[in-house]
Length: 179
Image 1 (tube, helix red, strand yellow):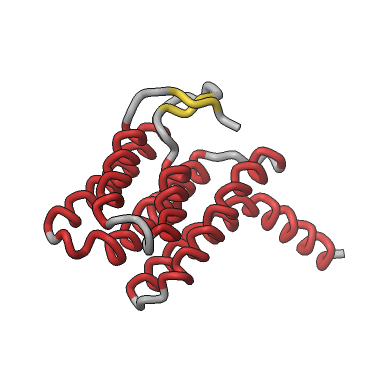
Image 2 (image 1 turned 45 degrees about the vertical axis):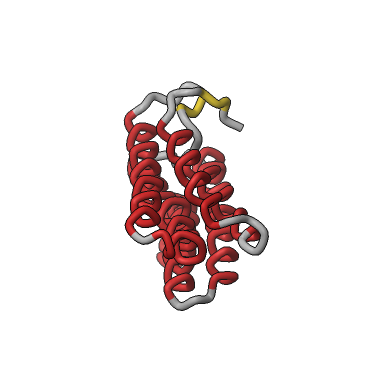
């Protein structure tokens, strides 16, 4: 009987943390993408960012479905997103396209990361109203990561503009309906 009670308690505990486990998976793949970039394994970095996006897509759905939304989960999700869709794509593109621009390449990369952090902080303190304000960092990071496939045909300066435009869209105040 005690074994069954403990097993039931463990299952309930695991269920209550399912969304957070997915979020930590998102963060882990974002970290792995960074390490892959630092080791020159750029294709793996892209793959890991896309896996992070997949996990990010489902952590909120799972939290709502299991009625497990929490302030901790919201904060953890934002920390994961800044790694997976802010830092990881920015460093990937910096290494592949912006490094030769020197300080200017660094500045555009830092502006992108900072804009993403600002966007996430603004999201965390706002009331949920069915709309996003500014471009979500997940969308910006996914577009930046997808641009990896244009490296052989697009000029490096394109990536400076892409980072700048993405940054401006993230911190802008236009609204976008949540899907």
